Structures are given as structure tokens and as C-alpha cells.
Image 1: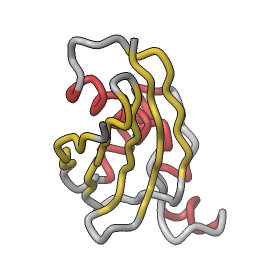
Image 2: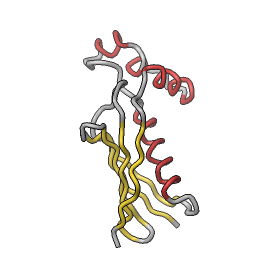
Image 3: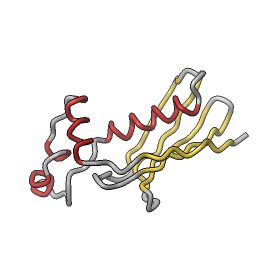
Length: 119
């Protein structure tokens, strides 16, 4: 019954997107917005909020299955996402009521994997 869902493409993440998400989420940890602080913490550059990617994943499920109710949703973060990267969200229905998804950058590096169940 496996059914591939249409890929969803996300434009390159800009630094201002991460600043805006900080304000919207209330997560002002500077590793997401200030390059100097990110480097001091051992990162090459600021990293995107994991919950930003998780939000994209939830939004993708809604786009794929707009008339269904989400019952269960789990994700695992695979690697860090950075400004300048564009992303592809891929999904697959594995049964009538369940599926899997992943977010990758355009070079194919996985950023998030997840599963979901619908009512």
C-alpha cells in the first residue's frame, strides 16, 4: 500500500528567518542567530531551530492530507540545518493511516526523519 507523497521544496533559509523564528517561538538562544556565539559554542555557524524543521514537517503532513486528523507525530533530528541551505520534504504513506517523512537539504543530507499516524 506504500504511496509516495509529492515532494515539498523549501527555499534557502535566510539568517533573518532564524531571527524571526526566535521571536515567534520565544527561543532566543544565540546559537541560532549570532555567528560569534555559535562559534564560541563549537559550531561552524548558527544552526536553525529544530522546532522550525519540525513545524515544516507538520505543515507538510497537513498539505498532503488536509482532510485527515493527525493522531501521532514523532521526529528525530539527524543533523544540523544552517542558513543558506534549501530543503526538500519527502513523504510516504506506509499504510492507509500511517506514514514516514524526512527533510533533507538539496545535497541529500538528512536533517530530520519522522513518522505520523492519522485518524
